[in-house]
Image (cartoon, rainbow, N blue to C red; front, side, top):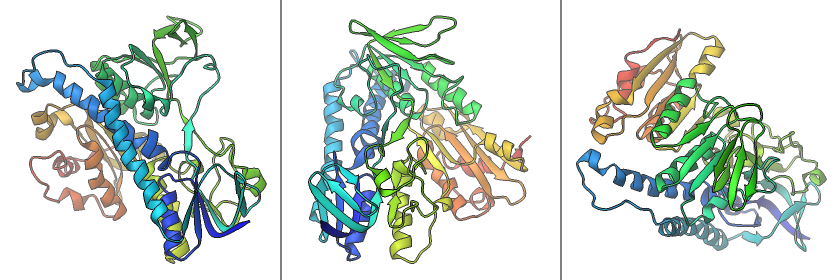
Length: 456
């Protein structure tokens, strides 16, 4: 039995920083990785997809050259081999960087293999037996594959990373974040794209006006949609994929060359031996944790996607910060302290903080709302990027910002102006009276806040 003070399982966004902190605090620490260092974000999530989005954006802008008075002779084409090579280089720099960093740290042992619990404080990794008083689980998640696709050569967000060609017709099952990002990028690469969604609209967690505008943006680029699609399944006919989208009425088949399943994620908790440790999970497999990310078993914590508390890279890193602050800094921090924030990285991006308009209405509180279309923002018009709008909600009694949506050019950066005010627990008047730089998109936030109206 190899004895450690702390063991971290997984090298996603939370694990490496936590292992490094444990080692720096003098704890004899081990970190275990069974696949690629860096986790989902680095290998098949944020880093590679945003690299692909950038290449797709370049192709899109090139095709729009004439809109800006720029004439490009010849056909705009995409070399997917070169696109993939660029993406792979960026990914390699990230995951090898994480691996080399961890292996260079004093007091930290890096173990490659599959960790399984044998008891509440012991793990096995192959033939090795490890023990520690503190164990941190950071095992991430994977694409959910439902029944009905067993006999189909389907793609997921992970296997999409191996694509070095432009699919003739990409069928995307799932009209939310992953599906929309891949759908738009491959449409811009040159694929015909059809997005199939079981619900009545895209990104159903957003307000209806947001869903409608996202659909308009994608439809204007030539993406096709099928909504209210029930009895979803697929089969192969030769090298073609046939997706069944409706068992009752209408055209119930979509024929394509490839199919991407983007209908959700599930945690990588099924093969950890959590039952042997007595760690409780919910009915979806997420590890149950308290407000400080401790499980029901003393000495075991769960961070990142596997705990169901965020499912974002930024929330995973914040999980590390919460655990480290509570263990080492005598600085009580809680999951409930953080404000919801996330982005959908289509082009333009959708950024959200706090409550949506629907949530504010359902809360019954008195509220104010300010809106402004991007078409009324000079910088957006100058750049030829006028899709989308801003929407900000304020508590009518406290003047505190309740939430905001920015769908439009640079919205994923601009939203932080509002998020920081919310963390400061300051009234909206602080930013409403701020003098922002002209010409920017962010300068219209004070203007929008200066024209608030009752939410009716």
